[in-house]
Amino acid sequence: MIHSSRPITPALVADHYDDLDRVYREVWGEHVHHGLWRTGTETPAEAVERLVELVAAEAGVRSGCEAVDIGCGYGATARYLAAKFGARVTGLTITPAQYRYATAATPGGDPRYLLRDWLDNGLPDAAFDAAYAIESTEHMADKARAFAEAFRVLRPGGRLVVCAWTAADPAKAWERRHLLEPICREGRLPGMGTEADHRALLGAAGFAVEAATDVSRQVRATWGICLRRTVAKLFTERESRAYLFSAASRNRDFLLSLGRIWLAYRTGSMRYLVWRARKPGGVCRSPSVGER
Image 1 (tube, rainbow, N blue to C red):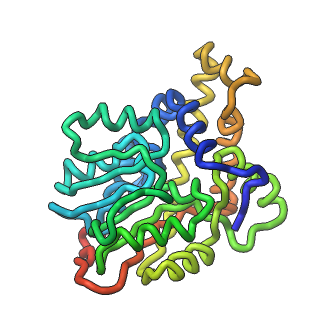
Image 2: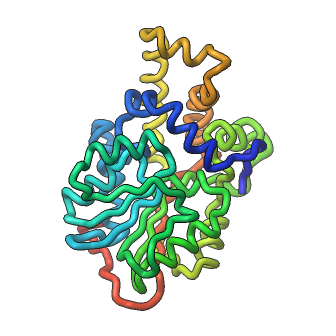
């Protein structure tokens, strides 16, 4: 496990996304996660939806499915699954700006959004058919508890899908010092696990790990696009330049970390894995070949 040299609390994570709210939406959009390029010809908007569709297939999301979105961001993934698959989704975020955006986008209350910490979620036992966490468990210091909570709220046979930034194993000293630890600190990640860490944590929570799919090459274009768009904003927008160069900007270090993330993918220092794990018992529909 790669740990941030600075203690990262939920309050710091929430502040990160509140402070960078405009930047995230203007640079990348309402999906706060990587895109997935299957053919390489997808637009960024299409690529983020391809990742959502992969998550849906891995989780077995279907009409009437009760799903929980662990770290739902602006709620775009939850809305997509509700609209395209007819799922009933409950999304949780700790970020007020994201919660306000998500609830405003779904005034009818479907999907349902909660401004709540996943580690203290208050959801009932065995209430969901599927759970998914797209790049959110990295922000949680107690990953064992995060997976244990997913196990608790899933029905027997239910699936958990986790899309996770994953550290190389073993990581070289220079990768730890110049890429992985700074990415954790600047991105407000308490820790970034290796593949072995995730297998151990999921197993300890009671899950049967069914698959770990490495899609690093298919998602890494995300960061080249983000870098180009961010640089363009700095050249053309006075407000963006003022934020970057102001000592009062609490999260400007993340903008400087964009290059580290791009390089970490290019060198293999960081990987992107999609995990599919199942809670034993019950009957869970397996995704067909056409859905995968």
